[in-house]
Image 1: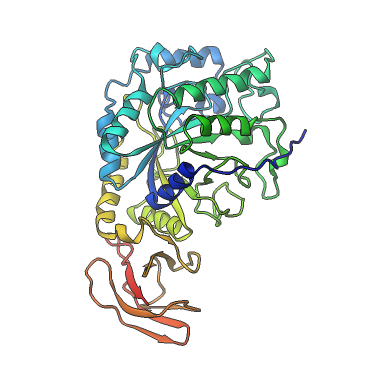
Image 2: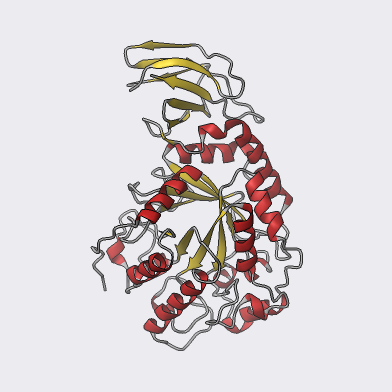
Length: 429
């Protein structure tokens, strides 16, 4: 079965303004956390181990994150230079991290008995950081989710084939709660659309979907409740009508060197989501942490393509954040104190990121990011501007350059582990 996706969508002025703010923010924190954190095997543990609904529900009885501190989490993000937080409100396991009337499988029925979404929303509003909410479209728990046609969750022991329309209404009810009871929400970050599509493929199309997700009904509901609220969907296809930003998983926009995003870059605001190690949710054995230089590279290449970086952490089940994550976020915060002008409020350069690095721009200021230069010089071809001055962003020390026709040659310094991007500022005229 296929469905027509041709509906038009005109964003409101408030939404357009929110899109521009999102473009300017450039850097956010992704938080994958819930009962799935308890086994220490990532957020897909229910599916990967074929845990039945009956058995998985037992995790609810000992999810008690007594060391969770919303103020510390938000402060860490803010000091780390992040401008927004995207929090898991409900993942594929169906557990709701807020006081919902529409599911018994929620945070209020744990020993903790406190509304996580409310605490995070209150703290984000207090500290001036935008809160986005991740919400799973698929559900490995509910009978009215059309699991028998899905790609995942086949081993959870469900036998009842419920009504798909009931499931759509359930999602509308929960989204209404999230957008009514927690103040202003920056965006809704959907995931799971791909569960009802063919396997990942560079030729897969949005019309390959097996059933009607009612996405426009969901999107229109969100925009009605909070017109400024941005909608994104991690479906790995061309953006659908009603969406406000485009997501790229584990890769920068347009490259797909090792990620899942085969779609082309659209005119919407862009966002790369990426992990610090190789896991989204808490994983006891995953110690493959990205270096500071690798995270800088991700941020710069995302910004060089005009996009944001949403950097993920998977806190421990008790509510603590691993020191390896804290170290990297703090380091990036210090890096941005020096180099933030080359990231925040910039657009992508006149050329896309190259093997040597990338370019960002803000008005007359062009920022050259020599991440992996070959030798001590760099040549830019077909330069569309004239250079009035060139200097290092960190020290203001002058940089030698020469312009022949439209070919610009710059002296560059080799990156180090402590200073992996010795940004050059070009003042143009």
